[in-house]
Image (cartoon, rainbow, N blue to C red; front, side):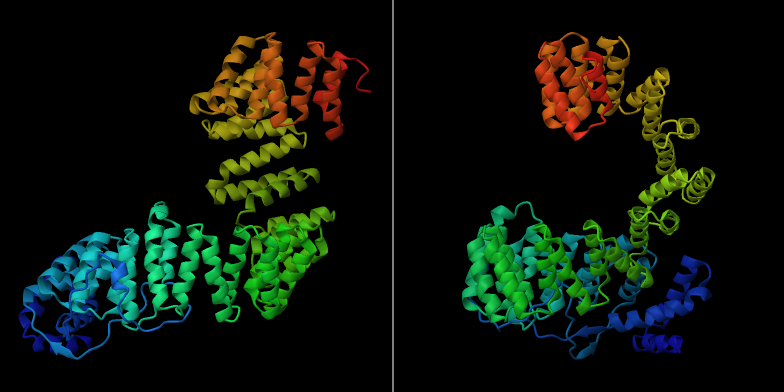
Length: 633
């Protein structure tokens, strides 16, 4: 049937010889013409219908972008009041009387060849061919095809050239003009785009001016463009004060230009005119906050919510405001109302579960999370947090089961860590080891993270021999992995195996010469546990060069200076480190320097202050006992 239809078209065009040429062409391309003949016939029938028709349109002046948008704005237009999502692709070429034209066999062949190139994924060739054909033939369908392909391929210069040709052929085409607006916006020609949007408005199209604000919001040059564009829009606003899209766009652009009062006045009146439209009220509330009037903003939001109690946007905004004010229970009540209104809003159910967890309302959180599981929503996250709740409630076996159900997502690795911790505490190491091995076997991308988890949990749970075995095997398999080398250096330091620690840290420095942590770790250990102070000082100085404001490195610098007898420099740096990061270990170092310098009362104040925050700090207690025996009791 398709073949017959194709032959009818070819007969209409007197192109039987072309049909034979196409058959030969297919044979040359594929070598097996019969396999593709059916598809090519389908393609040919559509293409001949496309290429043999022209649209009769009344000729109008060529569509060019005006040099002065403000002057163009003075033309009469129809009023538009709808609020719509910004789009540049809706609208179709209006149908008109069809006239059959005659194309040469060469043009028809090249058109089909261009289409075949596109079908075979040769988009660049297809675009080049269609653009050439568009210039040669002036055929509206070919021009439109070239414009769409150029747009798809983000070839903006060619898309604009083809778009201008399209508008010359069919000035009333809303689709062509929307494409043209899109490309003007992409090249930052906002005032010219505004002229084209106005043309669409005059033609009776539904125009969304908000595309201007959307583009400008991400344009680093917006600051120098906004004033001129606002002048044009204000001129348009005087003539069309009831156009909702225009008014919303003015609100957004005034806000971007930090003219909050002007934006607020338009938003306030628009909210009145649209009977408390939620989108406009939200803009109004945000502007009040930007103007430094949070009480008015809250009052306006509550007023609108009372007028629109079923509006999810307003209630969600109010709930978030309550969260920011740390009014968690009140926020939870607002979110619960949203779920009552829309039980299938599972994103809100998930938010409520997290909020309940934050408030330590574990039973409520469990209900919400189980609801997600039943409805197959947020499954991995739901199982992860159910595992956490069961840990809090001492339901270890249930927690293990939940963690095992986490198969992917942002919490996957943390679930594996939590599962590993619970299994080790239950003395089920072989089971967890097999589990982690199976995951790594199925997904090699998890090799490093899971080996690191296994080793670090073994270290934390006091199993250094097993941790060493894991790390030695891991480093053997991945000898240049910095994460594994650093983890093994920590274990070696704990086990007082300083040669292995130094070996791993020096390899990290070799692999990653800008890794300040490696320089600092090696330098501090040498200063603290050996008498290689000058070598330690050089390493820590390099770490300071790489990361001058890192408190742990400043602490190391102060400590090695103390070891070198540079007490004043040591005190200065340790004071700075402690002010940046009042950690117990830093306090122990600072207190020791003060004690040695004779400022024993100051040393005791630092130590006592650290012990108030961390009563069992071994660093502080050891320093006090070593320098002032009995004082730590």
